[in-house]
Length: 109
Image 1 (cartoon, rainbow, N blue to C red):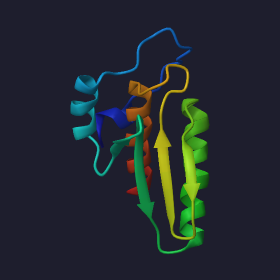
Image 2 (cartoon, helix red, strand yellow):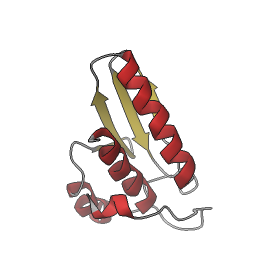
Image 3 (cartoon, one colour):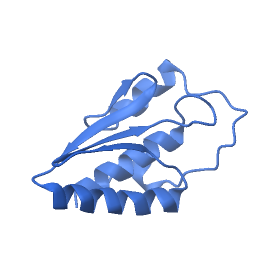
Image 4 (tube, one colour):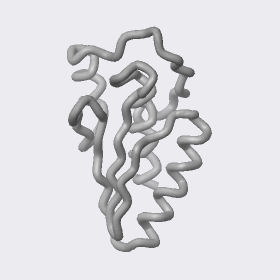
C-alpha cells in the first residue's frame, strides 16, 4: 500500500498556501495514473459496467466522509472521473494526495 494511503487527512480551514509545483512533483510520482489538470489532481477510473462504477462511487463516498475531504466526481456508465483539490486554500494540499492514494487502494480491491 502507498504510504499516503495509510495517512489521515488533517482539517484545512485555509490560511496556508497550496503546495508548490516543486512540492507536487514528488508526491505525484507516488501515484499511478494521476495528473494535475487546471490545478486539480485528476484520474479517470475505468469499469466494466454501471454497477461496478456505482459500487466504486458509493465506497468512495464513504471514504470521503471518513476523511472529511470530498472529491468532485464525474460519473458515467463505465467510468468515474475523480478530481481533488483543497477548496479552502484554492489549490492542492497533502490531503488531496492522501485521498488519491486511498482511491487507488479502493480500486485495487
